[in-house]
Length: 282
Image (tube, rainbow, N blue to C red):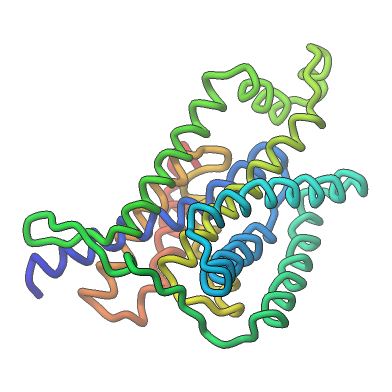
């Protein structure tokens, strides 16, 4: 295998890791700060992808307009789902079961509306790429990666450099002490839940642009992104970005140098090795 082909594969995996990071960001924050394992995050992302596909193919909407509609709509959906979990005082483990049920409902809704057939959102710029020496950089994957990097950096700055972020972290660390200092943890949790759902919508827009869509793919993404969340560390946005890049590159090199059938094993192999090694951030 030539070095150019290997480098091209690694570059493609690096950019694909941005999609992993986009999906992992909301789950990482929800799990780490709200103590809710929101599996419906993946289904929401694919619902956002199908809505982007539908608005573009049926109404001719530009992608940016679809994103402007989907992002605030998903923020509201996130508020509604979180209100339900809070209303019934759902625990961390129970939240995984409840939101898995929501995932099945959303997947069934997608299949009912758009069927189980594979769908692809073709755009005039889908095949555009930038030349970087002997390598080609796909434009859409690059935009997805840049969006993931900006959101991860923005989330990190928000958590560590703003009063709102520090209040969220304090409430997650010790809710009783935070409440004693006047922090309304419940109100903050609604804001964070809405933002996490909105990030799923943004991820869905890029999934529609870069991937072939099928309802059954929801489950196939769950395992990989779970590994990204755990490797990157809960409530660590930059860690999720780094873990997404690591797994994306590892999968791409495995497919190019070994066998594509081995790629699904990469994420969990890395996860198992790191859990046995037990680095400080895990």
